[in-house]
Length: 251
Ligand SMILES: C[S@@+](CC[C@H](N)C(=O)[O-])C[C@H]1O[C@@H](n2cnc3c(N)ncnc32)[C@H](O)[C@@H]1O
Image 1 (cartoon, protein in one colour):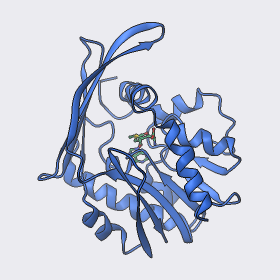
Image 2: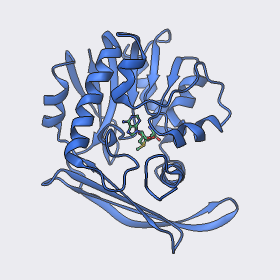
Image 3: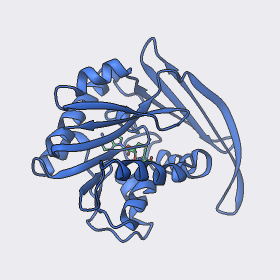
Image 4: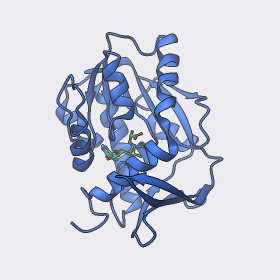
């Protein structure tokens, strides 16, 4: 399979390395869940959609804590990776684009939806070498509408997008032990707020090919303009993250 085509394995494997060995977001989710539960936003009997499981960092915590959680990810390779983890699923994870969730689930099915880990902006560009960013923006808008349809009235949606203050980082190189071998993993990202384009670059091994992932960026104002027709409230959450701004929306 050609590199950086949809369904490509390399971006999936690199994302897992970045997320588990460098960003290490595993510790953040228990704090987020505590906050959501303490404030009555996430209740134990809720039907929850983890709409972007990735390899399962948040999803596995929700499963362990006994939530009625449905897993989904738009990448078939990501779902393969997830299925290889041996989690005890409550429901078979699905491989649907958010844009098509409303064709699959009945209206007002979920009490809570998660789109964590800065995923929303990738709705139309993830895994594509040269995404059409104008179309990718439309896909983001469609995915917001689709999620609002399958959410119950008064249900909640948690998501993250890049902070407007974030300009970029790197290149950062780390020596990682992967499969018993030491490998150089490097990444960098640049947020061009003028053109509203985020460019994320990852490279595995000194001679490895670079994965260049471009996606649209949206400001707080732009996100609110798109989401406000479908949600009764949009609340910024201070999640104390250097890169991402959290949001909690209520239908
Ligand atoms: C930045 S990763 C975050 C994954 C996971 N939430 C985490 O924190 O590790 C983005 C994820 O969104 C998924 N994704 C991107 N566009 C999607 C879409 N349109 N529908 C469903 N999933 C999508 C990708 O397959 C990928 O797993």
